[in-house]
Image 1 (cartoon, rainbow, N blue to C red):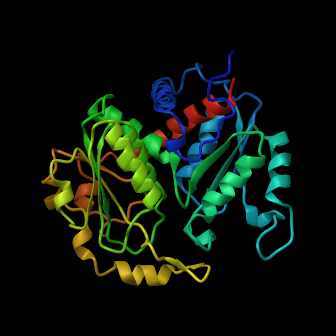
Image 2: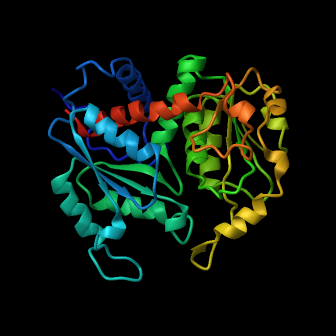
Length: 339
């Protein structure tokens, strides 16, 4: 069997893949979902192992990657860096260069998950993943880090294509900051902004002042929208961005100054966010949309980010998208690591 044009390619953000490569991945994921229990893709990773570094815990990510590897005929190996002798800023150990070189001899791919609580400044997770990519001979896949979550972004779009049609150009998605006590990473919403703008959607972002997202991501999103003749906008009103939207993506994220003195100050972030009770996605706001879908990467902070009525309503596609993580990741693994 032939290797794909994506064989050996890293996936750190969808912005670094061409639109054609993303469509190729989506179409394969859709067919893998359709053919899940047939033998069509059952030996794509036969006798191959995918290595997974979890700096942060997960529910969907570990399950979906392990099942994906199994259903492709391979194996996924769960690794915790804290149980390994790796060099850090405060301790001796093996360098990323040496670890990446050795692991390249063992596995056919390496996934890394590193989020807010395991870094001391925004961008450190992205730097770590890119250092692994520099020294690795196998594809490095972000399983969510402080800047991007490409597997989630692809699963999101797979869900929108299923519910709105494969041609998403001209549809509107609003990414609205959600009230809550979790001080979440920017990665899911930033990845969604990037990939949805690549797909030709109008992209809106709404958040309270002080919760600015990465300026580079906003600039890329604006450019992506312009290239498709679509609009990108930012609002600080908790309701106006819902107007005529086709998809509402409600998600809490940390403020722009969550890191200082080399630490993530979660308790301060929680105290800062709790007063913004008017930033809850509820049925009244959803009525402003064009019969909009409700999307969320999960886990959902019900009663804060979104009401139960919306999260469990008929227009909620959160569970569909969570399922898509399995199929999107199977497609990513097959294309970058398989025969």
